Amino acid sequence: MQRIFSGIQPSGVPTLGNYLGAIRNWVALQADHECIWCVVDLHAITVWQDPAELARNTREMAATLIACGVDPSKHVLFAQSMVSAHARLAWIFNCVARLGWLNRMTQFKDKAGKDREAASAGLYVYPNLMAADIHAYHATRVPVGDDQKQHLELANDIAEKFNHDYGVEFFPHIEPLILGPAARVMSLRDGSKKMSKSDPSDQSRINLTDDADAIALKIRRAKTDPDPLPGDVSGFEGRPEARNLVGIYAALSGGTAQGVLDEFAGSQFGPFKQKLTDLVVSSITPIGAETSRLLGDVTVLDAALRDGAIRASAIAEPIVSEAERLVGFLKV
Ligand code: AQP
Image 1 (cartoon, rainbow, N blue to C red):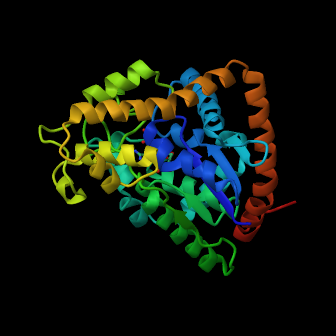
Image 2 (image 1 turned 60 degrees about the horizontal axis):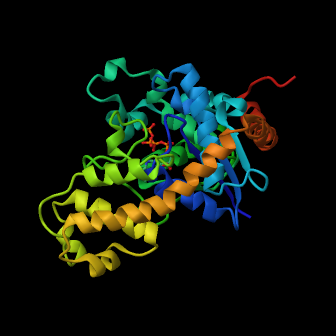
């Protein structure tokens, strides 16, 4: 059975983008893979996180994943900082990756913004930690949104260079699994920006914990244009917001964008947004309700995370110890 690793940052409340681009696929993959799911708090602190909020978000993220269908009893779910193998392998990879490789990473450019000098060193080497997350488990399949493809290519470059430098075939090649029609969900306020849980505007995203009223308001206020919906997907040219809303509808209804247009061609956004609201509310609000229930007793949740960390360590420890031995670290 192939081993899958994927992570999600507890940098806020998970969004519909995280759900359609990642979490929903994770749940489906559990049927025929050995899965390791990680709440990546080490990644989250590459940008400032209030400590109390980080702890709360880590629990809330774990609860949301379980509410979405992640199964911590059959698979492995834990918080990254609970397993030291991640940080140890990341350091080795910091010394394998080349600055030129990191300089090409578009996510760093996006996240650091104009003031790159003020960004943390952690944000810069984020892809090395991500490579370590995956390679610490010898995972070969990584389900991600297409925004993360470049980081996976880097993880393969690091593995190849490590294998070459130390004359081994130790780290395997990783394949990205980019699944589903909504590989990238865009902001409700700007169709050219991806929907992000850390976007300063709460109106830009649908949180998996939003209630029906919040969802209705956000969709009503979502940016659109004055034209009716086109009859064909080629009509989305220059209309990223229309493409995004139709894409969300298609992803949640299990259809295609063209299928949605066949139903709504010529319709104004008002009636379409009403239908989209109904669909989002019926898909998302049960997740929010289950998340609240799970957060009602954090002792059960914490025990599941502790157990997950023990099982994750049991897999990662021998792999990372062997990498350390290959590098020449004394093992006495
Ligand atoms: N808008 C999106 N559409 C599709 N997939 C998305 N993902 C994130 N946003 C979208 C996918 O969710 C997974 C977990 O992401 P992450 O939390 O590790 O980091 P991220 O990609 O940086 O997500 P956010 O929500 O934008 O977080 P912040 O705001 O903290 O940076 C990944 O598989 C990602 O592809």
